[in-house]
Structures are given as C-alpha cells and as structure tokens.
Length: 134
Image 1: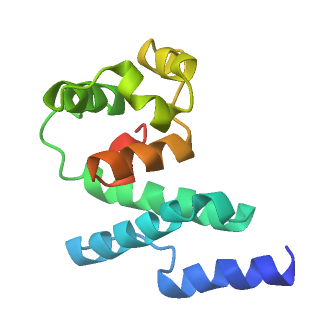
Image 2 (image 1 turned 45 degrees about the vertical axis):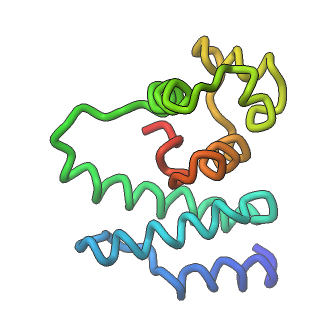
C-alpha cells in the first residue's frame, strides 16, 4: 500500500474505526460515513473501497438485529418508487446509462453498479443503502 493510499485509508479509520456497532448513535454515524464515501465513490482508491465494504457490512449486521418485517429488495423498492412517481423504465435511463442496462436490471440479469446506486439514491432522495443488495 502506498503512503498516499495509506493516509486516505487511515483518515477513514480515524473518522470511524472498524469495530462492531453497538448503538443506534454509532449506527447513524457509520451510515453517514458510508454515505460520504458513496458520494465520492468514483475517486476512492482500493483501500477506501475495502473500508466502505467492511463498514457497510457492519451497518448491515447491526440493522439485521432489528428486522421484524420482510426485507424489501432494491428492485421491488425501485418498482414501487416508479409507480408512486408515475415513471417508467425509460425515465430512468439517465440513472442506468442506457435502456439495455435498465432492461437487464429489471429482468434480473444485472445488478446495480455503485454509480447507478448513487444516481438512484440522489433522484429519489434516499440513502444509497436502500439500493444495495443484501
């Protein structure tokens, strides 16, 4: 790991050390850190992406303790949001990049990329975590 990569990675570790989440307050803060990383995903180095992956797993683990209802999949959430907003698949081409990528996602042949997740989260004003497959 280069020194520059090391410094960026250590910046995140200082901001939120990777350890089990034990309270709602810690979970909220970890979620904010994940959102900040996702906002800058295109410029993250590999170490920062690894940090995001591990932190997201910690958030997911904490939140899984409290799930009482059946979990909503990103695809079903997106279909619901489209219905509520009177949108169709072609309206989301800017978020997917092309009509074929949108079609592949809705048919279950493709998963969302991190860039698509961020664009959908921005469009619907939701946390990117809502569109990340569990």
